[in-house]
Image (cartoon, rainbow, N blue to C red):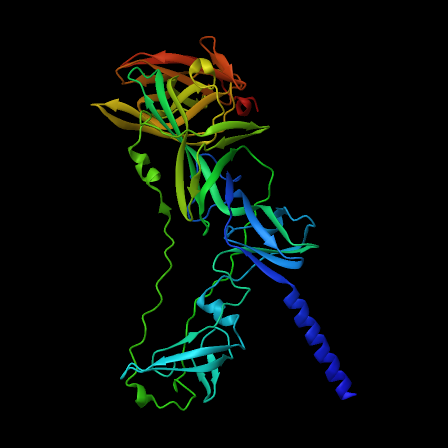
Length: 521
């Protein structure tokens, strides 16, 4: 009975080995062509710049690879995919009979994972004498993982790696098949005949984002602006995509935020117990032990910034531009296609101009939203750069959300005069960009006269600039509000619009009812 059982086990082992050998492993090292489409972080507001250390946008990666597989079952390993790949979104086309399964390989080649995946295998233990420089090599079997002390078995017994006080290292005959030096997606496929085909791999990946950066130069009269806009792509991914067909999508998409689990790539940290070794190797033959190694260096997590990004601070709307992104409509969203292949590098930013417009008609407006009874000290008005997204004003194209810096010319050089942000604006919509508080336009509400049934107030606007300014006041809580002149309305609120003369002031008088409810009681 025991012999029959042993024979059955041996037969099963042979069948398993035959099955394993019948499954070919085909490696696709790199794509022949790649396209990268970057989507913004859906939860990031326009006034927020992307957090370069934690990007919450994503990208659609489409790769074309030439793959040859034999007849039967094969495992095709797509190496060099994005480290933030979401494997559940991967679509593979080009295999005539389809795929059986797909997996994101969770282990990257590193000292720790190489040792872990070689557990129980034979390696070569190489030692160098400190006294003579002689090299001695012997076979060893790895008996423990990379956590703490690494235990090896040799013909001399068991010992811990690098605990003898002499230089020693492990030499591997081969890298285990399940380890890859780059992020890898593997698929298992079947084919009734040998096949060579162009395969398309498409998937979503986290760790990307983009935004628009606008640079405007205001004319001397404040009525025109030259506009230059940059499309800024950012990547936290560990994979670079050279010469990629690149585009960015503007608009809100209904998609849950998801992030990929990073592939495991472990360092190797060795610790020794006091005896340093359980082997019988005479330490005196190799000289005194070397000093302890320095602690491992911290990984460099700095963002590598491209030259075009570094130069942005020195750019104005009049800077020369050699490449302009092309806009396309995709239903409710807009796509900006970079006309030339660019490299979306790992852990970096890249900027490409997507809009240039000279002489856009604008106006500087000063505004305050007030409560009519808010008596107090003078308050600065808010500055706004206002236009309308129409061809008549020099625009007439969709404007994606992003930051804006405003310059003016003084003494033949650009001077920064304000910063704000642009929200997504479709053609025909009003464009209003808040630039912060004004330093020369102030507002104050004064109580002029108190009466039994109503009080009289006035809103005083002062302008210490050398030119007239346009001012708007929006009144909140306007129940019973009775202005001394006819006013317009905006969003259901009374709106006072006035031109305040240079070094002058404007006044609006109005009345408010007095709440006498307590006196009546």
